[in-house]
Length: 266
Image (cartoon, rainbow, N blue to C red; front, side, top):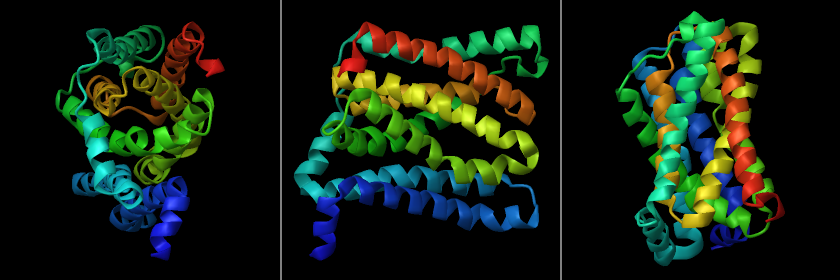
């Protein structure tokens, strides 16, 4: 009983603790030994690490929803996940990401970085949709509404965006540090800046629709087209250049959204 009371009293702390324990613990379990031995990650290692990452936000969100709100809370969560009648203009947001990714890639490949020539890997879109579905069940389904009830829009987006970025750090470090070397940390910082801008866009749509489904689709569009269009076998320096420019472009979009909707005052 005491454990349940602690969960109800500190639901967000318990949620993030569970998310990070599941995801980071799984990544260390499946990839830590090879990293320490300096061995390259195989596809199965990456797959298991990916499953551990997706399990964190989704299982954390569902578990904490049940412990704090019971079956009614679970039903309400899934009602928001099933909410698709929100107006066609909100679905147009999905097109922002492939469009901007292509523009950035074409610009960079033309000017200075030929290995960033756009490619197309259709399975990447499926993987991105899976990431969006599982992650946003927790990020927007559980964490965002509870954070938003106590803080302003921008503050919640920044906090949740940074936590979302930090959540990636173990998997990213184990997978990329040996290949990226000294450029790994700057690249991860640029990636983190991008994640906060992404969170602003997702939260803006959620504020206007109340649809977790649309949050999942927006996240899926972002992750899916990154995986599908950006060449995966590129050097760490190219990843740094891409994420730096892409984050800047996406922040321009986020700032326009903030100013046009007075979100800095809400």
